[in-house]
Image 1 (cartoon, one colour):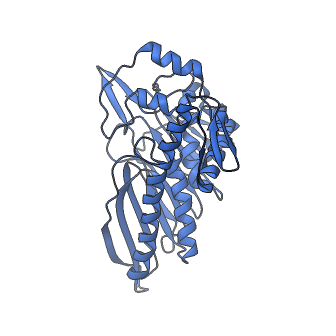
Image 2: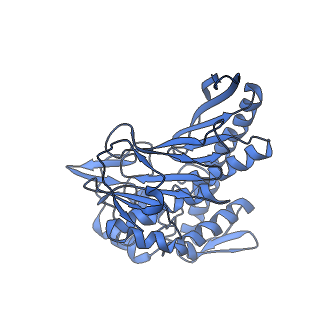
Length: 345
């Protein structure tokens, strides 16, 4: 999460749909959580749609301000408290977020681990721009040996404390998904039934785009444009973790922000992982569940997906080979017809 959000209307237009007259599609973009945000609303007049989008954008800004890992926020204040060995009263919302992130960490066999914010910072990813760094091996080893976990956090009557001073919570792999679920909740409360919310490639759909489902693209990890497209149905979310947005190069080696908590080093050997999720917390899961698959690499990604009850997932390995579950393969349309993915049950 980096730059402040800027509101501006990217597109507000009327689209012709067959011979049935005009129906509005309203779209607005902003910048929050360090990435581009776009909200599309179908079937509402512009004034009503704009009002709904403004409420969602302000909610995104509120979450950005609360969950920022290194700029002043409730979360960064809590991290400073943990480092001192003290306790701090936190909001009920942050209590619920930390508890949920802890549950997801357990389900992932601790490969999703927001407690390693100190390692993320050590590798230079707590910054607006990423400069090539090579941390001291002893420092990395110290963090790995300390083994910070979300389970080290105890919360009693609204006060949070950590039994491990090395716990530094970074919700960069959770906040975008949580924000998607909050956006869906706010839009539904306002009677908006057809919308698409996109936070940096984490996308959640409500309803439809007119008479057809919303169609979205999955970014190609090494080329401009989409690797594949699919129809996203009501309540579904899709999320991708890749090595192509937050990274730096040291020589010919790419170091991305996705760090293996067991080794302390940025992951290599994988270009991207995409997951398709469903249910009341589809947004949160679309963000958090892709990380353990990424860290598990091509050799262990399917086992990790099974452990987290993911039947629709895809991994692109370092050579660009595509590994995909049968469930997701049925949903995707690859832009290159010559693609022959490795399909697994």
